[in-house]
Image 1 (tube, rainbow, N blue to C red):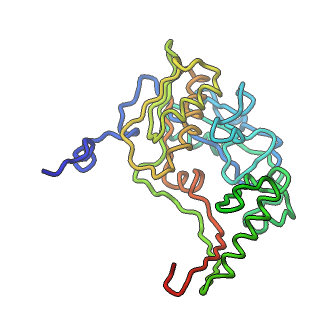
Image 2 (image 1 turned 30 degrees about the vertical axis):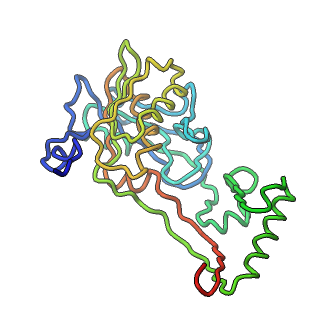
Image 3 (image 1 turned 90 degrees about the vertical axis):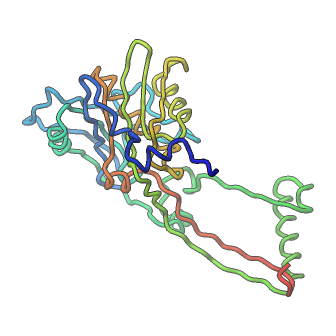
Length: 300
């Protein structure tokens, strides 16, 4: 008899409850993210319209954060932009309100004062280094992988030896094929957008959401809130797809919801719509690959 995954019936019958299907908690607020309208710039101010009624709206910016870093693979991503904008749609401020309609109006009542700087959108432009937006040369990481005689050599000499080994091997090949291949970024297009519900209690911080890797979110909370591990409670709800898009990114949205919940003292639900999810969340990176391969006439 064929076996079925335990979640199969729930998915196909509609019985599965995704994060936004979970019942609202008492006093729960809706949360939203105010994002930069420019891809790069100097953040000079966040201005709230004095004519707007802010009495029941919670606002969080970088000034409210004790630790402004998302603990990811590398701790280089701020929770909220502070002083500068580093990328398109970067989160700058967070808002929460009991009314979704008023929350939408509140987002429009905030004016970001940003002095734009030249962005870099193209990989080859970035490698030329005409405009440096990261480190010394716009390169985040370099890897050299070798196999063969060069394994016995160290450092720069190893690199040179490896290149000689490769060129010698290719020179001996009957057929050599060389190509340059490019791919654009790829959107995962999971059936359920990013979403989290966060709250605080005497037991500590809580977050439930569409999360592939709860321990990643746990790590992010440990750093951002300086809490012991047993006071952070992360739960994966039924998850409508991820494909890698819900590995690291839920740390960002969960921190945002938890920050709003901490400041307001109430549970906060943050659910992206499809437009925000496509525009603002992480994708598979674009790539340029240059490949040179050799073989004999039989294809070996």
